[in-house]
Length: 200
View 1 (tube, one colour):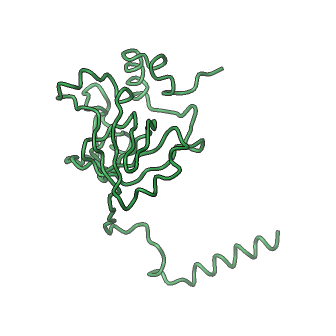
View 2 (cartoon, rainbow, N blue to C red):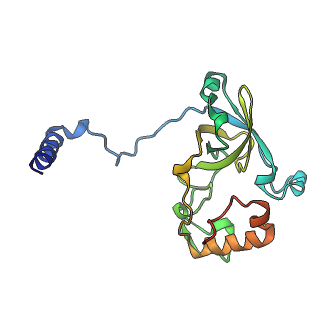
View 3 (cartoon, rainbow, N blue to C red):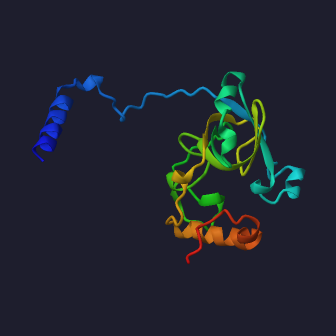
């Protein structure tokens, strides 16, 4: 016990001796720059595209994601995973409101944008969990991506057990929207991997 207290005391002294200007200050508002690793070559048709009527959901469409030549070797080993996490930049996002109505619906409550998945946000960085259909030399075929064609890619990660939360708590407005979509698309039958795990 004495050794633990001594260690913590020494750690605190060391931190106090470090000049404040040499410490990482997360309060800074300096800009952070990212270099794209690729782009979305083809994604689900948008709502105003006549081809959209042929696709009922993003889970029924295989999107094409390409990485630049310098990052092709970064894909080695990804084929061992069934799902991946795609981090992309919503490059056509313009508005950056702080308060929004989810899905742009007037019957939804006015909430802070950080409590929604809207691409219109202070930093329009978006994340999609997708099913991996195939991997080419510099291309991925995925299902479930909701980016735009041409969207810059920031990162690709494997989806693992550590990413699974079986019964997360969600807001009332989201639960209402989920039930509406579930009734419309029959998630349990068509997309059984979506939603919380059934209580046994």
